[in-house]
Figure 1 (cartoon, helix red, strand yellow):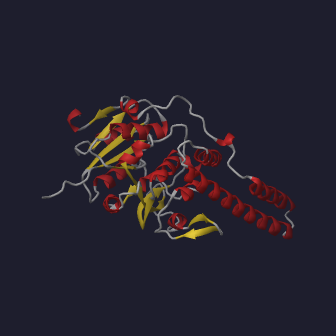
Figure 2: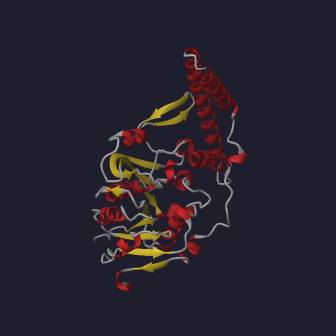
Length: 341
């Protein structure tokens, strides 16, 4: 008896992605695992992106969804709320990224074997606005150069090793989400993405998934991560604020088990000790070079890390409004498909 292929929902948030959306969707629709539903969810685009999507609705797997403007997390949640209930896995592809034809099949095969895992992810590398390689190998090396906290300090981790809660808590090297296939039941269990975040909602979701089970890497570049002047993740100040928010929200979360709390506390202290040691080493080097201002800045920073025994509670994000359920997000959606055009 043959077994029906597993359905995968691919959710593509769209906001002024006209220059890229055609290439992004063609790469998704060309996947070797073709049992897909592809939900493009518009967040109030003012360019030609929506019309370009409508021109591709001759593929019955593709739907275009309109709604009120909600931001990236809310847009992902709308797609999650209306996803086919038969889908066991979900992939969130940004409107400007390009996935390799075998990405879904490779990650799906791994997750069907590793039933305890909540997600599997591929390595990414940069392309520019034209789709040409940008710093070839640079971002892939960043994703592979993982470290985790041990009793003897921060130590390297093999790029093929599972990623667990303490590691993803300390720093996110699993992005963009375009290369992360998630188990649908796990994503629904965490309630989707937190709209209090503007850019770190995907990292926050991965931390929550890691509480439920490991994240599994595939050490192969299968994603082209496009970098251009409009990337929200290039806002340094916002990234600093939301990094601190992920740390504090995770550290003080009610969802942490006693074992989670012990692991997070140990990881944080090891991370801060390591950071302090590195900053103080840099301070001594600045002093020898006669850079007095640099010395005092680095020394002060290094000492602050030494005494930062836990993330500050004031770093936590507060929700802007009551959190919607996924069913409430789904009610906001208007779907367009081939038969409707």
